[in-house]
Length: 154
Image 1: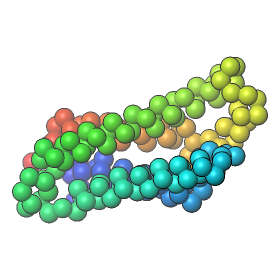
Image 2 (image 1 turned 45 degrees about the vertical axis):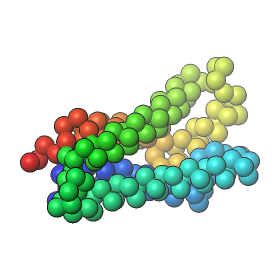
Image 3 (image 1 turned 60 degrees about the horizontal axis):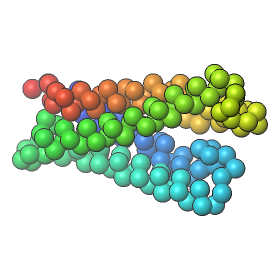
Image 4 (image 1 turned 135 degrees about the vertical axis):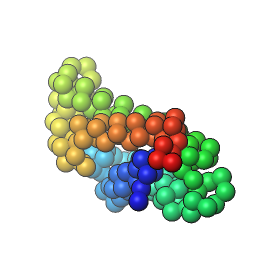
């Protein structure tokens, strides 16, 4: 059974694995008309997301009997939660900016062609900016609680 403190680790692993696969296998969905160099950077970012998911799985799979780490309220797990929580600030910012660009209608922020491209891309890539903002806010809140309160199921 997953404890409340472990839940953000599980959610992060699921959400970021899906995102990682998108960045690795279809980088052009993340950044349309990107250069070959940009595709490499996006794929590298996908690898980074996969490694963060692996860290989450390690936290979830460690035995509680392992001293100082397997217990979700341990100092190490709490700091891992804090680190992963700070990551989720940036996807929230990106989703908010994408929503703002769409709402402003391109005035000074994007060209009309890019605005249309953003609208198409936003609705097709893993749910668009509204879904991204909601999911990353949930992850951020979960990791913040895991850091602040530890394992409150004990």
